Figure 1 (cartoon, rainbow, N blue to C red):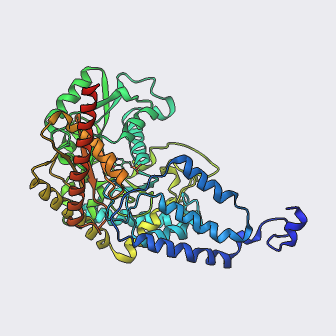
Figure 2: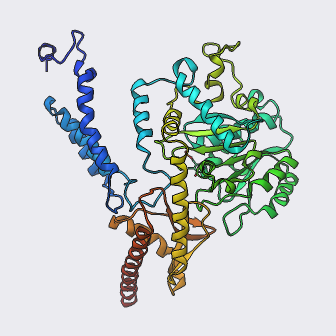
Figure 3: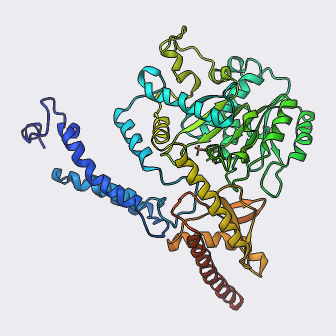
Length: 506
Ligand SMILES: *Cc1c(COP(=O)(O)O)cnc(C)c1O
């Protein structure tokens, strides 16, 4: 189109800007069909898995949308985009979804998230995120009540994700336990700085060690027991050995709900040891920290209030849109010691009643999505009970699934689940094929498209892993999964036999 014909089409401003794209009436019109599509998506009442599309095909589909140039088809394009997003997503609202730690959201939290996207404030500073910064304080207070820390409260910062929270916590520990590292780097250390963590730690810990100049070789691995927890009896010995090897372990990271099995490390005993050894204790409670909101589950986190820091993802077991993590510090001043920086163009030297609430000095991010707001709003409208009920349900469901597994002679549970993650194996009398079989089962289940589960490797043993995040799932759905695993396995095994016979003939 020439500029003249563009102008005469009536959709453009005198500066050539496509006005239609900014039209509030159109905004509302475009939204309505999107909402009905999403309503249907949330209302998913079938049991199914992921529909994996070949990347080249998906790229072609996406490009076809771009290349169709009929202007009047804009609404169709929006619908096509939403459909494509839904079709290609892991179906988190389906009862076939038992795979990972993200989940369908409490719809209200997504509504507020959407509102925040339109309002679009960078939110690291009080003036550009008044409500988010207040929400952060309110949520901190609520958690302090649950922790029983009214008098000596934890300070809280929100970060974009558990990985960034772990990095920030270890950075803070480094700055506090090692002298002048922020300014001088790690050059002047007598012993090599090191961190200790479980064998089963999340990979973000290794990354943090790399990023912070500690180096992944300086991660002291704490042996775990058969429940997947740090074996408390071996911790002091492992720390002593590290010290003899010229390592200065300044931070120990425990998990509350580790990624592989949901195991909760013995926090209280670890806190005694770290306090005795002058080591910072960080609890990576990205998954399991949410148990704090449940009166029934909270005792599982006994001792967490003794930690120097801990982190909780709201986008996991608190069912808000990705991504918002709560990072707690026992000592208020520590929150400011992660980033010991002057930047006069934004940071105020003398704080007033407003800048006192700025989150930016405590946070890696500058522009920051205010996702804390949707968590707070959900809490404000439904109360903590909405989270508590769902968490209790999911934990009970996992116990039932475990009990059911115990009755099946052709399955073995790897552990007694502590939260909502359950690892198990389909056993076969021919034991040497069992490891490989689990992987094949998982892949075949994914291909058949009725269920979405994950897999895990635990001390060399491959297992199937289910994570219950969807409250619509009942024990009957798990029973369906178990029978599907049986049927898939018998197919795999007969194919293997055929292959074997062929190779024997050759
Ligand atoms: C998910 C998870 C993380 C990483 O959190 P993100 O929000 O995905 O960055 C870290 N640790 C544990 C134990 C987790 O479960």
